[in-house]
Length: 358
Ligand SMILES: [Zn+2]
Image (cartoon, rainbow, N blue to C red; front, side, top):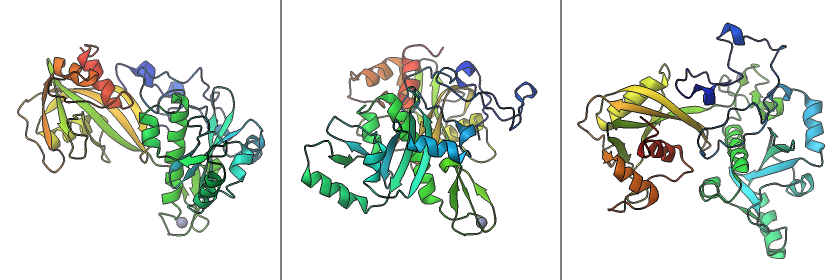
């Protein structure tokens, strides 16, 4: 399932150890796999982008070992990330703590779905559990009884939690993985082939149709996000729903049959009427709303006259390097702003503003 991207430039950061077998030297069979990822073998992201730091050791080769997974679930050190309708729960007595032990999780009853996420840097297993809305009454009862005690639990959307840095970056990554997986289960309960209800398998990493035997795997939707440059200036746009004064890099979903380079050129031409060339990969970011992979790129403008697609953008224009620097550090003369460091767009803009991109 690893996405095979032909990466340039920063390939040392982006090489995926479990690349599907398209290169003879990497060919391996199901029974001769390399050792599982560990904290030491995972590529280190070159930029501190949200949802990318300290990913878990997913132990993907152990997902069908039911005894192993059950043993982890029963381990006293194991922790559980709890969700209700895609919204994570936090223990509020000590800030925003999303880690529940087995006894705490059991108080909410049987989960709708369980996914083994992996082991963290301390070799502690993490699972994601989802519950239906009925548990909210249990939580409200707890809060009424002991609003200031360790039992106080609150459901808070992941996006503001992550953007405001309310939990440590490794937990943001784990919460993102959990949210994407639980959302996939929630919306793929029926077989896309025959319509029959499906069953979860593989520690939550696939669904199987008992009627037609089809197997269904979690989906990831690739999105290109690109900063188009023209010498000392770059192209930014505004969507109507952005915060007032905020501009960002253009972005769009990759379509079937496209490379990410093709998608970059098509989207920029569609949205801003600019033809571009020399597409270069920068970095990527899982974006769990619900399950995208943002593929950050730079591209060079081949034309410069902007024609805004008003169905997609409220505005698009060229910004000088100095203007971008001001938008990033909050000193822009007109009060314009750019996305925060949590988002990959910030890092594309920063690389341009600081001259990292040359
Ligand atoms: Zn089926």
